[in-house]
Image (tube, rainbow, N blue to C red; front, side, top):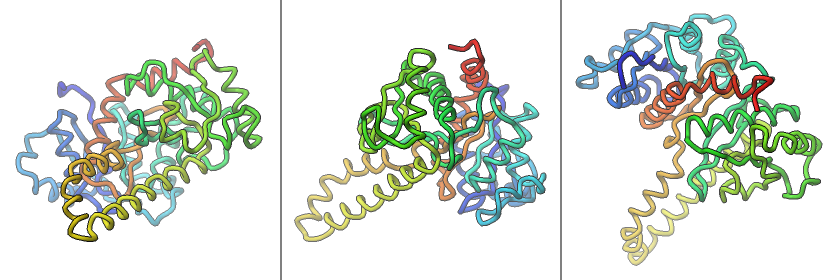
Length: 338
């Protein structure tokens, strides 16, 4: 990738583990050709960079931002703390000095800062957090997973269009299908929100989206549709449930294989296969979730993110920028857009 590529602004001292995994992930991304602006306390970031041999020759630049919004602080703090690292990141995007903002820190603060600084794409009432979950068919795209607990039916229709463009442009899925999460496949099942959203999505079918119909919870991991739309409250519960269940299941498998000598020997035989499975179910494989619908690229990662998650988030952000995602989302939502 040429060095003329715009760098990604990383909120480099945020998250549960501070600067270490952020800087290590940035070094890995820079080695893969993605330039990164490390935004945070200058001295601490330089000290962390110093631990990585050869980092001085990589496309990495430290941007000083001594103030970092902690995980236990309020998202609304972004309004008064203009020098906070997340605000510096989103401003760099707004000013055209960075291709995207990526943060493993306070998700509410990242969302508030992106919305405040970048504004919304025309035609979008509320941005949504889009994430990928492993499914039988590779991965399934779920949104919203936490930006909006209370929603209106038109939001779900907008998100279906945004997610369709995102998958086409960034993930190369040519004709993705959309499912609406409900308590039954039948059109007449679901809450008032689901019933009204279903009617809107049915109208959009063939005009910017491919609407499959209602899907149930079990369809998510079957990969019945490429995209599943729901409100942020339900989506967040689904996401946390999936991650929690995966952890517990692996614990059970480990316990079962560590019992007798016989099961320990069996465990050795399946270890490689289990490692592959763990890899597929690990959130760090996908790096971070995009805040879809703001006028600029913003990615929100797990507070517990490791270096691999940071690297993958930076690569994903770079890919979205190279694919000119924002302009294509705006075109899709323009009144004449199909």
